[in-house]
Length: 162
Image (cartoon, rainbow, N blue to C red; front, top):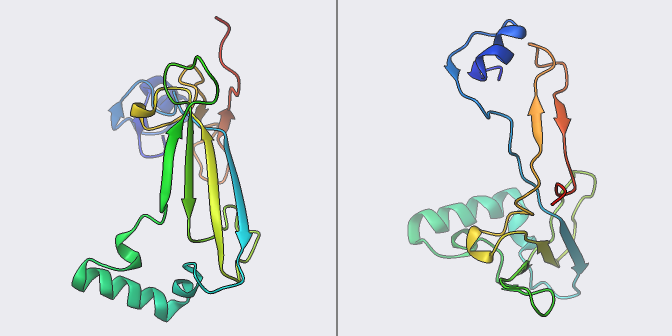
């Protein structure tokens, strides 16, 4: 909204210029429930060695010059969609496995080889790219015209009543 794109009335209430009056900006946000398991390995077979600065440069150059190597992968080496129980019409769980560990929140320093496995609960059929329960919609809105004030977020973590 600070860019001037959003619902015109909401922008005007914050004394922001209206560049484009677009209803729905900051609305209909979706999240998904994700469980990930990470473990260390005792042999140097993961992508950990590619995370040092010079190694990253080498990975990038190799990809630019040959379109091969670790830079040519999304690093989810295996995955699939499965049904969580009998009677579910479409797969509702996504599974991925990768040759690296990840620091999702910036609190843990990854300093050894390891693997990552992720399970995601999908609310729509797998063909919808496995987002979340499509009935759940969160929203965010500005409470101030300055970047120093936090946004108001309404997460809505449960589906609406049917």
